[in-house]
Amino acid sequence: MVKILIVEDEKPINDLVRFNLELMGYECTQVFDGNKGVEEACKQKYDLIILDVMLPEISGFEIMEYIKGTPVIFVTARSSPQDKIKGLRLGADDYITKPFDILELTERVKAVLRRTKKDTGFFEFDDIRIEFDNRRVFKKGNEILLKPREFDLLEVLVNNRNLALSRERLLDLVWEFDYEGDTRTVDVHIQRLRQKLGISDRIKTVYKTGYRLEV
Image 1: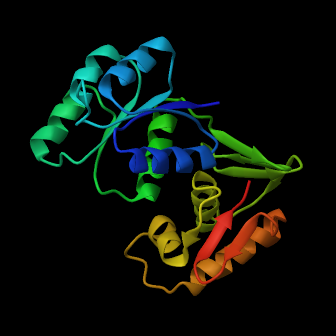
Image 2 (image 1 turned 90 degrees about the vertical axis):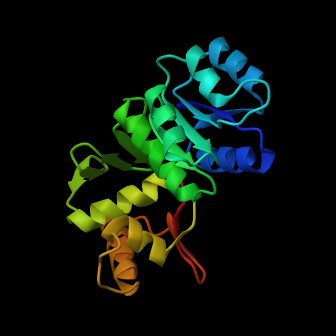
Image 3 (image 1 turned 180 degrees about the vertical axis):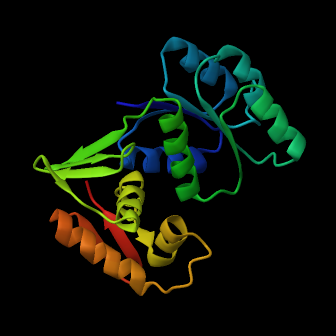
């Protein structure tokens, strides 16, 4: 299982990040100051560290000296270009400023893990196997042919599994902002995924919101 260390002194933010990452199937450890962050990062191997900059005791920038080789995403209120450049030059893989969209964070976490080969290139549930690298889907060992947008939608649902996504958010993530359509397009593609993969019981309709893949 992928292990993620969250070093963030604001407990509501720390808890929010942990809650959503654990819903995605990751194992999370929480610490709330810089000293504990260094201690925990040196005590065991983590696949990713979510790191604030402005921490009690030791700053996030200083912590970078102790965690060479571990992927890091800065999540911080320090939003100046100079701070971002400094964080990236110190070796961070990404830099997100507060306030942030939790779905954006989870997407970036997935991207960093994929890029650093810490996350697997496939996902399985029930009798379904999804291979992201070659964009293939199998049910009971038999390949199910999905159209490009259907696969994109399935990948977004998997990456945000157990989270409710609005139709508008799905349009943004799958069709991007320049798509000239309405939310009924999402409904049509969801219905196709349910039928082709036989997962009507897994893709839940969230009343007046959108959809959630429950696994």
